[in-house]
Image (tube, rainbow, N blue to C red; front, side, top):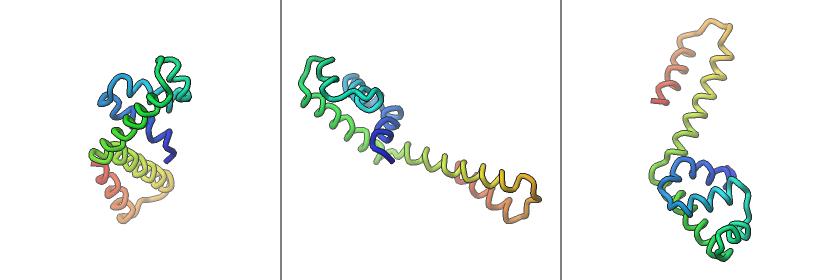
Length: 112
């Protein structure tokens, strides 16, 4: 997964665990496509200070995700759901066999 997308998702999930400035800088950098220089200018600090805040916040988000795995679990569930939908669409006009029903049931149980 592209880093910008990953950090953006992590901000949505864990953003409230960051300081207000950390979240603001991450959102400006990853979601609003502002450069480090633009963020620095907007906040009257150095580009290096902005870089430090962003890296610290990014590392904190990654560390939290490594421990809690909310994003990973969510993405896995989405993949399972997509597969179930594809299978159901394939079987829509066919009579379901016992093994097919068991496969669909197994995939649904994985979501629980």
